[in-house]
Length: 298
Image (cartoon, rainbow, N blue to C red):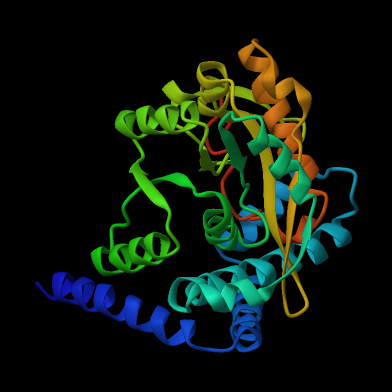
């Protein structure tokens, strides 16, 4: 009974804490986020060990000392992302508009939309992905999948924030996929987080930084079904705000061959990461699923 009451208390406190953080100035949030990242590094628990494992796998040419510096920097940047996300959720969209300081290659998006085909924005867990959705939505509209949080109060807060920006949210299931296909066929825009680990039925093993990674096949299927245009996007953290960056993906992402397309998707993510390596979410267990018979990574 006490455990249940404690869980209820935590569920109520989390949204209150996020709301409090959300009202802070951006610089304060980033400083607190940086502090939380430094603490994670000092504790050397899961986040720190997974980050170092991923960097060792993906950047083997680096010296150990270099990887440790990068791992610490990555945890600090992830801490900033978490605190910034609270501010994006809580503050009005007008505030966010003032924090997007520069935009790179927006002409790529304009060109894609001018064709009349649907546009699929691919946003890896890089920089602050919570910034990209509202920015895109306010200009061209956006439909994205959403998986409910186990914390009902937090779930309502995040949903309200994303809907406030005008996003259309669809469930992360077959109905949601059908909705994405319909949206793209109408020439509208959808958004995807392409570096999530899918279930086995929705993925294929393709190289990511030279390692076998279960890679979502949904991107390939949406392109194949709708003839849409894919655009890479990231909100890079810079002093005082963000730099919104758009880019064309590797051309092979449009290949009819599933493995070739998935490999190109991962190369496109790698290219995006190269813009700010420390801002990638390296503590995510990207290789937690491996082919049958292979050793576990973590």
